[in-house]
Length: 340
Image (cartoon, rainbow, N blue to C red; front, side, top):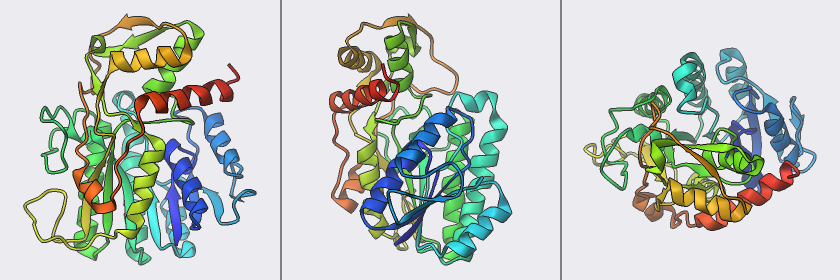
């Protein structure tokens, strides 16, 4: 297939593009390389793919190219779709971060709402066979029922980031209803691994533990996260390329519909306490962390826990990389990349 991957310089986008071209797909990746976190890291990911930070064709993969485009640029996005002749789209680009959405709300509307509208319009007008897009476990808000199921109500987000991701799901359903666009939404649960984002706990904690700085442990450590290894995420994601949604037959279930629209959770389905996670990091790094116990932060939730039964039934695959294994790989990458 010919696939458009948005956010190719991002964490999951980088892995998705790499795996897709290795499977033989033709991939065009786009990214605006914004400075929400280190542009140098994003450029390093592109370099690892044989790309530079301007429009380029990979020196490593003949079936991979890159275009520097902002999702919210209506004209550039329309031109990209018209000229691209894509079969499917994997939309991963977004303004990420729960806490950042509290202080910089406008960037979320521009990227996550206006940008997603341009994706939907591009798919609508160019006969895209299937749109796979990134949602988030954050849409569950303070849901107390566990594990989180796509059949649970998600009407009470606790951050603007979560609200934009939920709005993406509703916008996708609308376009599926109006134009018959097949769409698959994926609610990711705390993705981590080598090349991970600097604003995520594995990166922040590793950096500060190695440098001898205190780590901020929110809610006094009484939090659980369903940590999911990035390569498991990508494996599930790419298996779904061949499972294009068809109109469902039960409109009472929120994850399926009478239109070709479906939502899945992608998570390890094995939540880990934050203090246990820190202990694993300490063991891998070989240093005891200095902990600053903090209260819960605005927009945060105490627990995430994915029900992945529907996804497993569909693609016969469930994320399974253990946290011990995944964190060891991350720490090894961190030390190598930053020459610690």
